[in-house]
Image (cartoon, rainbow, N blue to C red; front, top):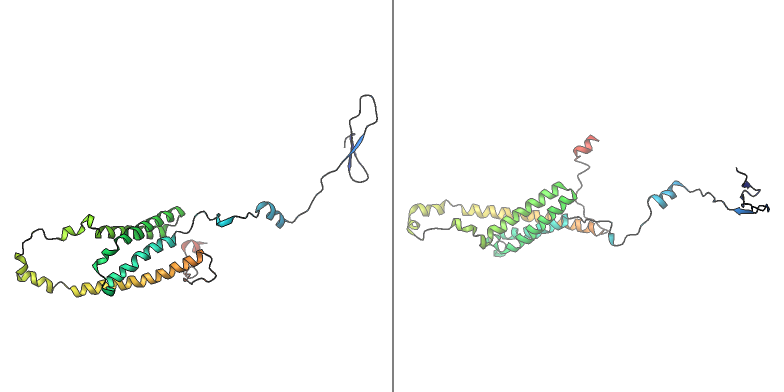
Length: 233
């Protein structure tokens, strides 16, 4: 401790003011030192390491879950197509009436979802949505009259000579039209069951996204089928 300051009886430092050149007595002034406050480690972490910041409207979630969007596009496209394949209420035409749905719901939404899943790093959903989106775009283009996909199957000759021979008539007997209709109806029924399961999953995802108090069970198999990385750990 230097000669300019000393500790008094109250525990405070008394600092001597600089003396004048003429030899007057030094003037003392009292300086208050800062005290020490003891806080717990939990309080320190709460105040300094993880402060409570109130963020409105969920701005912390920069990216939303794109899976419900792609699933909605797939279901809106598949559901009417299955009705056409099954021939409900006289539906037919091979789904040509739903060309707009194939382009925008089945194509645009699924490709957009594929890109968003790619950004989020979800490989499997990216492949699924991208493949289905490309399929529906191709299917819609096949049914679009502008591309004239049926031109390759049209008769190039207006001649009707071959229409009265026995060989041509025999092709109708061997055409298996009944089997074709059965296969189309079966495909429509399987797709309809798939659409029902998809709508159930879509409802579960939407209820979870809005934090609904009641959640639909979707069957978590992660505790039954362990992944490779989980097995290594």
